[in-house]
Length: 298
Image (cartoon, rainbow, N blue to C red; front, side):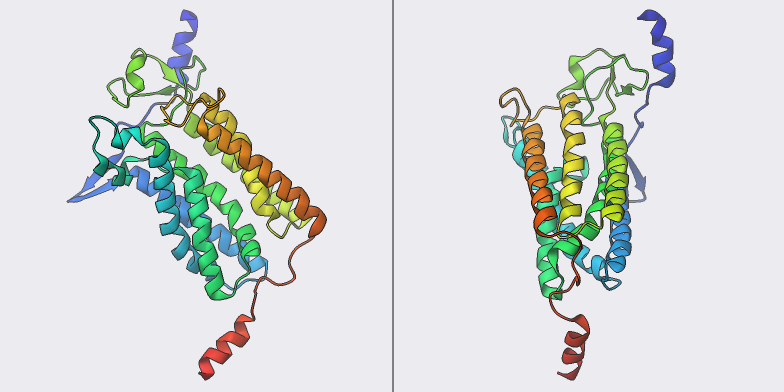
């Protein structure tokens, strides 16, 4: 093992010395920038795919106005619910549950509430829900990939110790309730990097499958959930952050969530493939041209 130490030291992944920069009185936080970059890329991808499916330019951006605030609230609620002891336990400060810039966004809460925002926006605009979710889903994978770099800047959600060459260095002085248990020279699995790479690979698979088989009626969304949950399950197995709702039957709460969602998504994918093969002929529940003409006449 000692002969491997120079190799590990040379190839290990360093953590950034800081995740916030002060621009005058305004703090510029890397975590927020990663989230914003992911949102912008997801909107761009979704817009292109929506137009290709027969939608109108600008509609995905309009739906994002609903999805983003709903998604952020849902992501934070999910995190606080599964890690409530960090905010409401003995000696903690409940107000910190609102400190979203410190990190702590639960993916599934964000997806669920973000989808609710899309539902509301789509109904108001006469857009069919499943086609627009199919158009937007692959871009969410890229957004998740970029967002994981925020965890790197915050030095959070890393995996268990490893002697692999690409181990992640964590500041030995970091007091996150986990790091202090290990020695100063220990390296950890860079789970942020694993999920970044997995999400990009899943994005490529979903895009390929959609083009090859002309998926519709929510099957792209289901394939997205299937692909992501497979990766999230094994990555979650590596993580050592403390989650209150954990160790149920030997599995963490997020692992059970991945299993359940994978089963449901797979069942829907197979059912929809038999009952609703192909794609929708129209992506609108009402004619947007006729509606616009009617509103102008009014």
